[in-house]
Length: 357
Image (cartoon, rainbow, N blue to C red; front, side, top):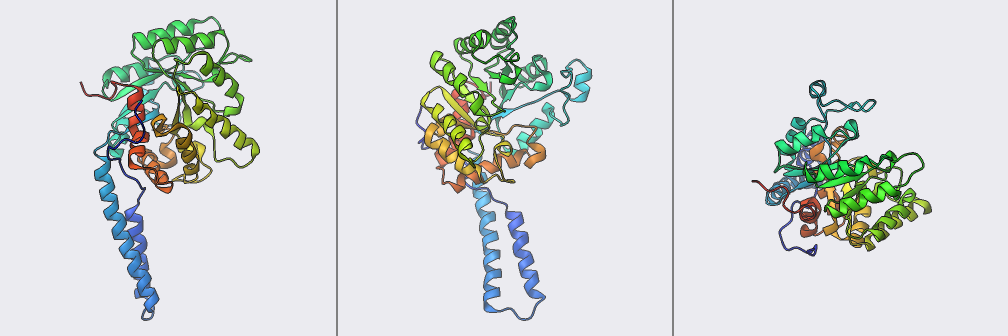
């Protein structure tokens, strides 16, 4: 795989909000006009604020122009049926009816406004193992989306045949392992899990692993799968749900997550920042997490993902993309590395995707 030190010019480096800055500067100027003749210091501060606002606006415009030259790909999002589609045959799994809008029309609208060119669609729990809705989306927009199916770890092994059908016939490019779906008391390394994992590697489909309950519970299973099946690529969803460590236990978990970088087939999704941050938008504390991930995995094994539509009520879809540029600006990520994170990594992992026919 190519080095992350690509010389291609990268997209925007810094999250900017020129309108807010301009408003702040304007209030400062109005306030000074209602007070006695300004002191030299107050006049200087007001002038500086106005100048800063103008500079931010100009810089924002330059960043937009730079970003437009790069293909941006969202490595992690979901779509599900609209209420009308659910009535027409794309029913929800009982008990998993969505509370957010997550239909494809809404997604396309959000992507267009954010300047996102393509995405990896992960089968949502709302439809469980019925992939018909996502399959219809992939067929309708073949140059826009590729799919990640959901592994069915049923004891009878029926999920293995289903996995092969989804990858070979329905053209899914990846599969998700959700350890919470394994039968009670069973591990991802049981006979069915190992067969699913091996089949994914045989078919060239990376396995995305969602460890929502924490990497510490599953680190031994993941290490075992890495050692026994080095030909199967792994993608750790949402930075393995690691937040900035606040105690020894959390530091140990984060270190174990970083230690998986010794396996060259392991990739990381810097995704769903609202889930891995202890702060409000723009989630600046994830900068330290990302810095250590880049140091261990490299930018060319790191990819951004929004977690649409869950991210929409948190910071908006465009906000999810903009936060990446803001956070990477805090740790001086190079333009070429930012380009890997925002789309080049996932594009190289899934070669041939997001190419217009």
